[in-house]
Length: 185
Length: 185
Image 1 (cartoon, helix red, strand yellow):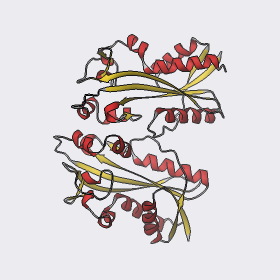
Image 2 (cartoon, rainbow over the protein chains, first blue to last red):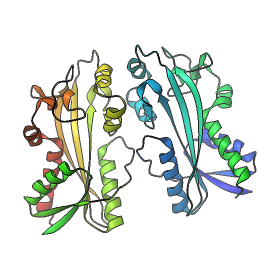
Image 3 (cartoon, rainbow over the protein chains, first blue to last red):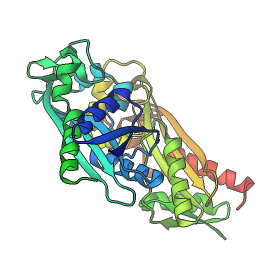
């Protein structure tokens, strides 16, 4: 079974990748590789750079992922800096920024980057389109989940099982899996 | 005259460095080096990484700089992502985030990074402490200048000459110049 190395410290993400890539015949192994995370307006640049950096450094087939929430009325903010903004401002401040905005559209996005040693990186984009709620709701998940409305419920109100079914990260990994089927290693 | 290479695309910064480092006997030459700009909570990490990357790649003595505004009531936001936030949100949204905040303290900060090929990077921090105004004032400068109050005027109300005298970037460069005097190349 061909092996793909996933540079992540997150056990939940690792399990998700093992399940999804396992279905198309690949084994996923965790990789301890603290790659440089770039500043960029888009996640593609960040994931592509990270995957190539690890692949070249460790001479292995490497995947990485990066996620963010892109809010329409805020010109895509916080985007690639979603974790920083969550840590430094939090959801209440994000809601304050959107006071009076009628355009509530937001996109949760994950980009998986994949690269072979010496090769060009590939990227796979997964998205969920929803809206920003007027207040925080729900106790599940983390980060922006309580203010991200999808089909009438916030991600904070969804059980993990249901959220994983529609999740942006799952979508990105499934695209990567399909690509591997037509581009076998 | 020993040469230091400044990785910047900004003619104004280059002139400032030429003046300040020229006074202690160093020549500054512009360097075209598009180094990876990291994500990090502090500017030191970003400047140190950039300087080392250029120095090692081009086998020269390289300086870089990075700047941001750190707002106390917002836990340091926007900090290293000041340019992104300026481009995507703008000053009016920053003022909105601070509505009702009585703690208006903010620090304009520049960190100069300097590295010799194969060496460890050094960083030099320049700061100006001020407050965030209640509304935009003045037509000079750019970015956060119109909302940064220093001794009764915003940086947007100050002529360049006066602003440069107190500027965070000038402070950081002068610290670097003093260091060069005691650590000659």
